[in-house]
Image (tube, rainbow, N blue to C red):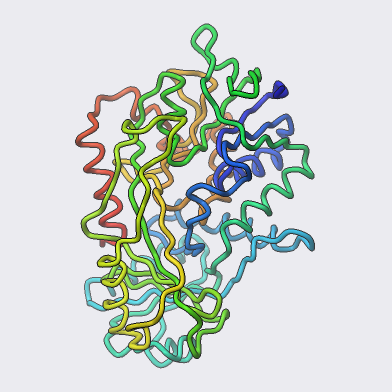
Length: 405
């Protein structure tokens, strides 16, 4: 039997575990986290690339990312279970004057947020990434506190700290229904039994739509395919090399196991309709799309010729969820009190997990949450009309223009 709990979190990925950690640190200890898989971190999180970048186009988003980095640093101090955080910095490379102008604006936003960044010349960038060709770069934005982590290690680190704080975990536990009483959440029903609760936090990733639907909410949370590849070890690739992002080529990457991890945002995305599968089912299987993956390689070879033809040993692929307006869905529903959303993360679930936890704590525990936190409420979709055809198109557009100016 499952224990009754003040708070039940549905979903044991980076977001669910990060939220549990943030709530426990804020003094909320009567927490039960439910995960349908045999262990935490086995869904979309397991397919993450692990990069964490802080330069964003607004002070709010930068500070959110900065909180995530601070969280990873804190977790890394534990002698037993670490998130495998590597603070190697990042290079953001512009190939046009228009993009260089955007980088100057990003630098100003970073300055306003208190984030250290610098615009580097080509020689300094070459010193930091010797094998990359920077001759065509019009601007290079350096952030020394960016880095990368191993996604499953992040989840295990959260879980380790949560258990110290009294959070309970139930894996291999599939949620079948959310029980309402007088219009508000009162319990969660699973195959292992029913547990009463005051709050249900929906951190179910590609199943966040279905969990919300169990409580009677229709939310536009759209899974969009994303892929990257990892090569075999390559000469000169060392773990201390910075992460990189090349917006004009819609590419990002880092070193992984002495090989190249390279991913990109497709201009014509493949997305799925969450209504096409159930809470007990799974999104469609993803087979490696080699024309797309090979196009990433060909584009990157313009800056790193060694990438062309490199043997690939692994393909990462998953269904991160996107929203029509490109913003998270965080906070308690006005329509169904007790149902709290932590979904629609727009491919920031792992890297933003620390910050998302902070936002959720503010939404629940701060009597006067910020305007930014209020803007993330699920009410923006339940109290205004929208339709699925437009929502899916707009959510896919958010993915396709991820590096848009």
